[in-house]
Image 1 (tube, rainbow, N blue to C red):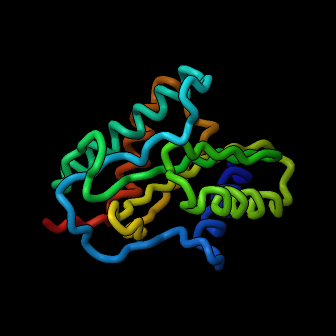
Image 2 (cartoon, rainbow, N blue to C red):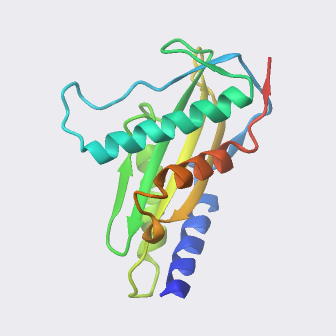
Length: 183
């Protein structure tokens, strides 16, 4: 079972680094900004969302805000010099679900999700597995240029409410580890 999970993680890693027109890693050098804001939510006003999912979004945003503050970027409600979007992909034996409420429009969410699903669909093992990927984008607000994109993977079978915050903080830190900020 554990062997199967590592194979699944390896398949997803190949997915995100594979040859495709959708870039999974982008780094155009130091980001020149002092403020950031999150992409506005795409969820329609009044949309029904589970409490658990909202809590996850709050944890992800808090972790991103802490990490970027340590790099010198101050969060503002709207109109930051750069915008930060993130995408969560959860994949198992039969399904791939993408949570893209805060990823922005036209930012490759569907293509990234499809890429993950195809990579996992080719996996031959019948053992149960569930993996997750967090993709974080930093985009220039004025020109919508993708300045930085990174991702991290995790084994979701070991996830539980007690370690959720620690796991999210670790994923975000790993995603943003290579991001450089210049004033």
